[in-house]
Length: 98
Image 1: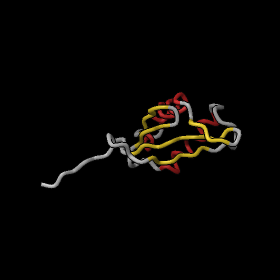
Image 2: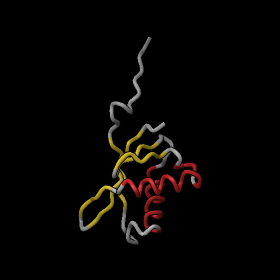
Image 3: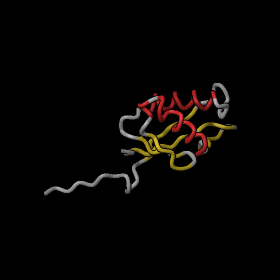
Image 4: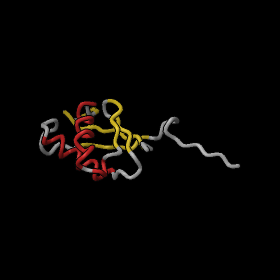
């Protein structure tokens, strides 16, 4: 279900900083019942989430920015950067031909 791993960061004083796990968890829990497109999001650590293949990165970025600004985690106009990381071996599916 969580086939992709993403890095979620914001800019502070000219450098990228990982979003705290608390922020990511707040977003995921809030969206658990309010926006089904984001149901397949799982905060893993500061700045790291696992997401399903159907989660659109551009919509996720916009929704997270909006939520973080409403919660006063991010200043108005601050931007998030979400980058998709290479899949870890534990997340890759292996298939074998018969």
